[in-house]
Image (cartoon, rainbow, N blue to C red; front, side, top):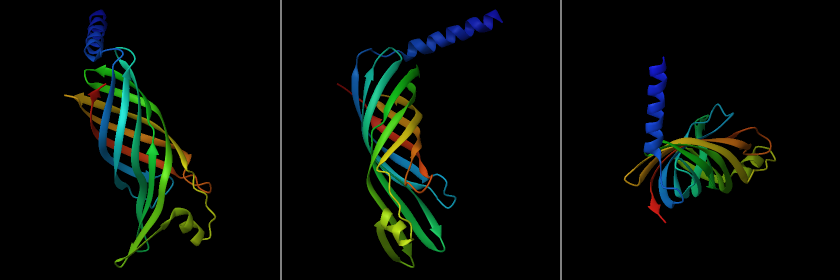
Length: 202
């Protein structure tokens, strides 16, 4: 038992040593990727596949811990088909992910934080028999007899992991929405996000 404990401690020490990074350094990482977005509490919703693009700054606080903040243009929402009508809810945000990153092995980090987002576009696109129409989300609700108010501020909890090799960074995270999309519903954003970035030292 003692040998197992000692071996585990040696392994952890080795991982921690390999994960060490230069304290005080700052970098910028332009990135582009794919959102797999949907809306909670909607059984008819299918994922909307849409791009995300932006950049993140990262500052190394300790050998193993860094803080990062970013600015991302993120296309979210959902898709569905009701009664033969194809519909896409387009919710586009400027998101500001603020994350703590813990490097547990060389190049590999786990991350957790908070992400405020500001809605800059809300549309519903519907298609049937080759005819397509697009209208604002609030107008779509009004036409259905619902006086809906859209929440322009979205807050989510991002959790994920990344791997860095030769300055390239592959990042996978889930953004768990905390804020209702509209006042009259409990539906929230739910987004899986996969990006590829390139890190430059500053």
